Length: 392
Image 1 (tube, one colour):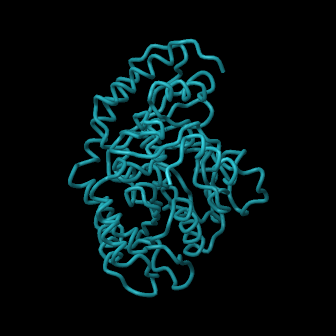
Image 2 (cartoon, helix red, strand yellow):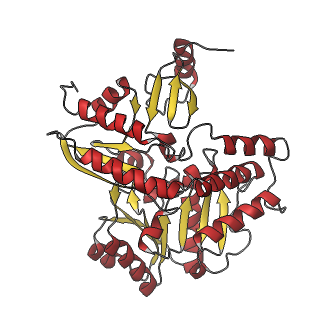
């Protein structure tokens, strides 16, 4: 059954939960860094599945792996061994240098798992997160998330969580004590404004954790899998975290999450955590294909080179609206002096889809397969919308 644009919108409006603010587009097809709506209009995608489409849409290697595995075996809980899972666990540990990995289904699940593991291993309850950090919306991950509009409707949240300013090592040092199980940080704050962490701050956080018996959790849900110009963003600073949370592009767009488990975490006790769908053969096959594509096509290097060019071009834009341009790899943001929503709408009218990061930051997360010519068109469109009158 083929639906028109109005039919699709009417049905979703009637039956959806109502939890999402929807843009007036019906996206029906994707290829690489391009999307098409139901009316045939083409867009350059700088939303990138909110970071889940690093390999581009309809990636042929991932699609083939999913089709083959779907016809072979989809479900297999971890009470049994599985060949696809075994190969993926080996690959993730080999690439990251971590000895073990826990497989789950999403970013927020990976954060929940890491928080539980930290409390289990240390016997402590305190968790220190950062202001403007985002880690998910389930109760533990939400407790680590900063934004009040996400938190307040669900309070009281999980006890033992506190927040300190990001990139402020003194504040972190003052907060970590003998009750702290873990510190959870992003190498680049995504939802919090595309704010890169300073090397001194991130390395200092690791030192403080080691000295005081706390564990360091690095949330790479958005920054992982070549987004920032390295396979994992913690590799930019030679960090050695105790847990690394992964998701989004780990399986080429198929739902999946993981937690890399470091040496300091020791051996986790059986039956203390688990997941019915975690490590299912379908997601594992997709992830193996995705990682192979990232390696074969050198997407980390591509992200570093194109990201540096794109960020440089964005910085040449002259507009009184721009406060700052920042980013790492192909994770870029423009902080404006006013609310970003009208400019997202104006970009959409010019065939460019982008994201907010808070109220005032334009965020760009294009698939890493995007062509430089498309990024040039994005820069031109941004220049135009930031230099024309727009009504809020």
